[in-house]
Image (cartoon, rainbow, N blue to C red; front, side, top):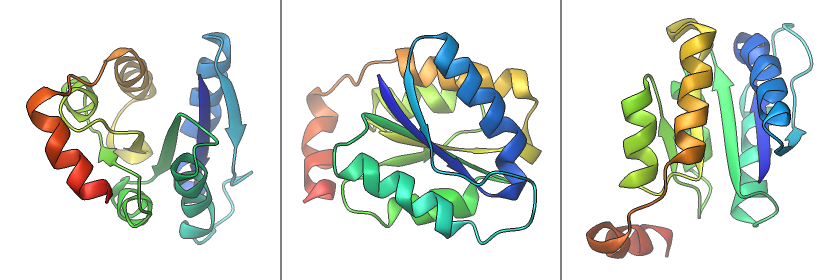
Length: 142
């Protein structure tokens, strides 16, 4: 799978770990930055991830920050992006299964790295169940 990833300074460490994890699983990953823990303005790195997913250049996207809240807000402003703010494995599973989330947002300050990696794996492995949820999602994307 082709996956876009980006973070601000507060999500940088987890971005690097998740990027390595994804590559070891065999996914193609493009890092949209940032490249250090030096303070940055997060929309500069989050919006390009969301836009690349919306254009279809990447199947999925992962955005990270301190809490993940601002990153989810920025990503969801891009038409065609359905970004789920995930704080545990169940929120990731439901974000895919019921909402067809093509982007997830994670907060580095909100969870240990092991949980973040479990969230990513669950989100990648969970199919969208469609059916009764499909119509609502199509309306949102229009």
